[in-house]
Amino acid sequence: MEDIIQKKWDEILEYLKIEHGITDVSFRTWLQALDVFSVVDHLITISINDSKIGDSKKYIVNKFGIPLKVSIEEIIGESFDIEFELSSDLKNRQPAPAALVKSKQEPSNDLKYPFLNPRYTFETFVVGNNNSLAHAASLAVAEAPAEVYNPLFIYGGVGLGKTHLMHSIAHYILAQNPNTKVLYVTSETFTNELIEAIRNRSDTTSIAEFRKKYRNIDVLLIDDIQFIIGKESTQEEFFHTFNTLHESKKQIIISSDKPPKEFETLEERLRSRFEWGLPVDIQSPDYETRMAILKKKEELDGLSIDNEVLKYIATNIKSNIRELEGALTKIVALSRLKNKDVDVVLAEEALKDLISPNNKRDITVELISEIIAEHFGIQPTDIVSSKKSRNIAYPRQISMYLCRELTDLSLKDIGKKLGNRDHTTVLHGIMKIQNDLETDDSLQNTIGVLKKKINPQ
Ligand SMILES: Nc1ncnc2c1ncn2[C@@H]1O[C@H](COP(=O)(O)OP(=O)(O)OP(=O)(O)O)[C@@H](O)[C@H]1O
Image 1 (cartoon, protein in one colour):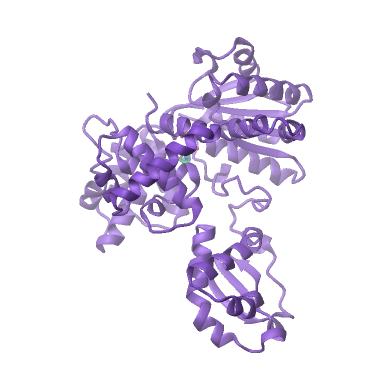
Image 2 (tube, helix red, strand yellow):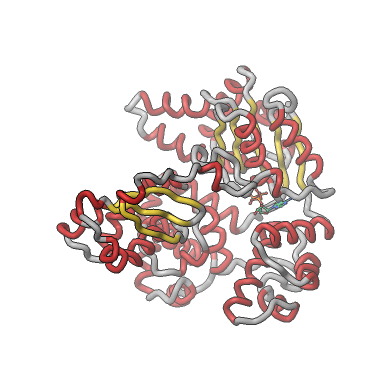
């Protein structure tokens, strides 16, 4: 995390300057005298260059303390505490070595691999009847890459732990050998990067760069391969990527929502390759596994929830672990909001939309926002917030566009549900996406992926 904050430090200061109307002279004098000294857990220590501006700590804390905290949250997307220290006082203080401040679960290389979720490890993965084979095969591949099952093909329904297992394999391999070149991508990213490379075809290095990135590695993990089916040039490129890696004995791990034989329009030569190694499936978890997953989440989040409430969730939410975890989060959020203890009555209220009699999910603004937020690595609350940074504003406009396409709601109602926005703002958002779609093939691909995630049928 320290790396990321260091890298984004200038952007954070620029943001602060613009959002809080800081004058150029104030910016040059005060803000440019600030540097990140260390990031430990969620505390950022900022050094004040007192050789340049003297002991101005009190002034800086008062003037910039809160705006800086808010700006960091806006740009990084997470909340941090901050403290200021004079650089002369910090001179003899060593920044805490990153390895000492990480939690037990976190692998040692998360800075180098920001695309891996530090929580998705074998330690946090609950093994049940539904996933024991997939788990065992994944561990075998992690322990001996390219020696046992190549490719490893993990398939199963939505939200059942495929990504979690893939990240676990990557973390494990990197922990054993940090020099291994591991690349995890979704097939959407693979497609979008290929689109970009083809678009810049006149620049002969762009396709070469693309190929170098995907072929010059030891382990390729490609998630949700179903999204490349039917995209001819992507399939073709992936076919050659696969062959190059496989021939040079590099490990390939693929996930999908169905087994290779069920891909009707997949070319035979790719289908047969997917079956070369070991296709393993993940089923919906049984009741005991659902309880164990809820307890694991309770432990990881430091919660203490009445067993009856866990039983209520595990009894009612059966087929999707993401929803199972989401249910727990919703209950805890409602209890905080209402300042009430978590009990079954509160759980019933919190989950009334999730637990419908036929368990069929409706396409709602909330569902669309949740899927978009997850896809872009932000929080559903960001979508309805007033935050204006592009990494939030653009997904919000995509939400507006997809709400209009996939629900019968009026612009006014969409605006209301997306943070009480005016219908003209919604219209502007929709038109922006419509315009971009005309020229941006990557966006077309992303919107296609999102639509399938929202409405898998
Ligand atoms: N066996 C498990 N133990 C603990 N947590 C799990 C398990 N299986 C899934 N989860 C959790 O459920 C959530 C959804 O899992 P994940 O994203 O891996 O699903 P997926 O199968 O890749 O979904 P999608 O098909 O949407 O890509 C994650 O938060 C993950 O940590």
